[in-house]
Image 1 (cartoon, rainbow, N blue to C red):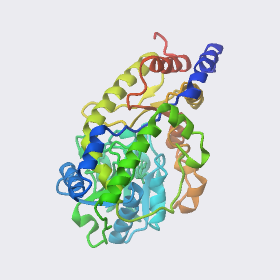
Image 2 (cartoon, rainbow, N blue to C red):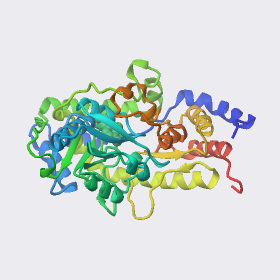
Image 3 (cartoon, rainbow, N blue to C red):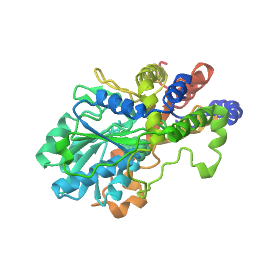
Image 4 (cartoon, rainbow, N blue to C red):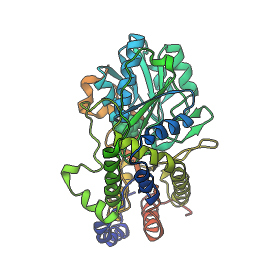
Amino acid sequence: MAADSTLTAATRAVQWRGELFRLPPGGHAWTAQNVIHLVRNIRDNGLREMVRSGLAETFPELEIDLHTSGRAALAWSFRALADRSGRSEIVIPAYTCYSVPAAAVSAGLRIRLVDVDLRGQIDINDLKKLPLERAAAIVVTNLLGIPESVDSLKTIVSEAGCALIDDAAQCFGASDSGGRAGARGEVGILSFGRGKPLSALGGGAAVYRAAAVAGCERPRDAGPGPASVFRAIADAMLYDIALRPSVFRMLCRVPSLGVGETRFDPDFERGGMAGRNQALLSCGLDNAEEHARGRRRVAESMAKEIQSVSLFEPMVADGAVVAVYPRLGVVAPSADARNQALIALTAAGAGATAFYPESLDCLEALKPHLVEERPCSGAHELAGRLLTLPTHGGLRGRRLREVLAIFQKIGYRAGS
Ligand SMILES: Cc1ncc(COP(=O)(O)O)c(C=O)c1O
């Protein structure tokens, strides 16, 4: 797995092009039809109704509240479930988006970490070891658009008398035999942030059975008025420009923009979803299915190619599971191989990332909020070996061949 001279030469050869060109790791451009749709609806307040009915079609029989972000929806749900149960802990997988523990802290609750396997899914044996008497909820986070199986979790959750939160921030549109991601627990969470499977450049939602959070004050949101629709159009146009590889490369160099940074920050805004995000969500709902189909095609085909030439293991869904792949996760044969691959892929401008920099058991800022400090070796291993590739379709042709050559050089599969 050590870097060889051919690889170093290959890296140097692509470096100059990577400096001019950098694919964004996720996200999709808005279309001309989206902008026309917004312009047509600039005056009336029909966009709010479109959003409500679009989400209600996906989550029939569930209550839907729109929040300012996915983490705000999580914090609201955590607080509601803690008040209902009189409990003060939330169980969170030790490798996930830092916004999940940040939401628990924002809700004034303590965190108990559970270890994960190399797909980022909750390690059931580790969960069985945890005392759950004070747990108000266990969160599944359905990493990288692959719905996590919740069958065995449901049994543990009901025996422990706590709630299951099906966090589908990365997984809108995915499903398995247990149902739609987001609808398989007492509460489901959606995020409409940048790069999510259903994007509105911001915003989030909680979807739930009414009894789960009875009596809680719900966030209020005003529908999108003309000013917020104008703002939505401007945001969509700027975002499309930012996604261009030559522009994206420059934005990555502006430290104050923090592009691609993952920060633990429990001090975030809470409340109802902004009108401009609701306006964009009405377009996102139109795009979601087609984008998901495209990403699925790209992810499955890249996964096959990577597997055929190297020992890198792409994260793809099994059998009847329908995944949505906001990005394709790839687990390297070792942490060293991951780091070498990331250097070479970054030099090639391939839009590769390391995803979350650390597992949550290693995150210093989180330690004061943990019920107990316990090492989570699976999460730690995953944080060291995971990288992601874009699935928006920009990684193709010669650049894709370069990427495959990098995987082959670093994680050579005998016989390939
Ligand atoms: C699993 C998960 N939950 C919650 C969130 C929070 O969503 P938002 O960024 O809209 O606050 C994210 C964000 O990436 C996430 O990945």
